[in-house]
Image (cartoon, rainbow, N blue to C red):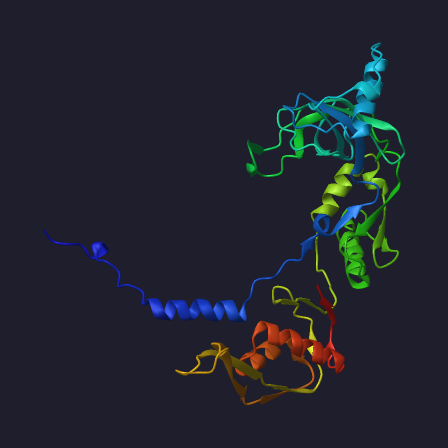
Length: 385
């Protein structure tokens, strides 16, 4: 059977030249790097969580509650029973199946009454475990001492503790737990977008350059709807004020959603973070050094002790004893020191490559960076954790 010309296979494309062409395209036509979204580097003033806290009792523990010496636990139990019409003397109460706890949670913004919140409970006394316990109704208050939620329900600790006679087995932390959806919101935090004619955008990391760039990006995005409008202006290094234009009156949520998705090039100061405990060093690409010459060398002193036994010879005088005689040997090893010269304006990448050339370890690099900073040649903040 004859093969037509259209059925002939094309010759294979050489792989190596194709890879080379792709590499040239990546070098000479790099992709545009996007900045960070505004929602990731800033927040709207007033849109935040609020901390809630409360004091309560957990019941139903299997003898792992607070001991009788924890007075506030039995006093709380006695007061609760008295409110229920049961008169009990706190001095005569001795129970081991209750525990006093602190209940904490965070109240998100715009949450409404009837919503559920997860709460954390932590033992306040000397209870050994909260396993199997149930939290009684606990009011959760804010910083203004108003009750915003009520917590109640079974506690999940995600672990256990068991054993007897001094042999115990423990998993996770048995004196702290969590109640999923254990708090019911009773009061809302008053906050409304409709009543505001301007907002303040607060940067999480204050920087004048970033604040200026953020305002320019917002004005450029809003200029399409209202030409010549200057809605955003930087107030300081951490705040940008945004006025609601007539085009977005009554559509404040749409305005915030538009702004949150904008990209901004974030500027940050030169900084070197050093953790001496782990030998970890983190440096940004903005770090520069001035003219500096670095000499690095190690001096090792090793002392070796060999313990030898000296025994008395035959027919030795009475009272002769066998003694241990230490023999010490000392060696001093000094490595050849190498000198590396770094010119002004050197980047941190050039510095690392130069120090690696002389065999510097991370811990040695920490000492070298401290010395360069002390000499005034490191143009960056040096933070030691």
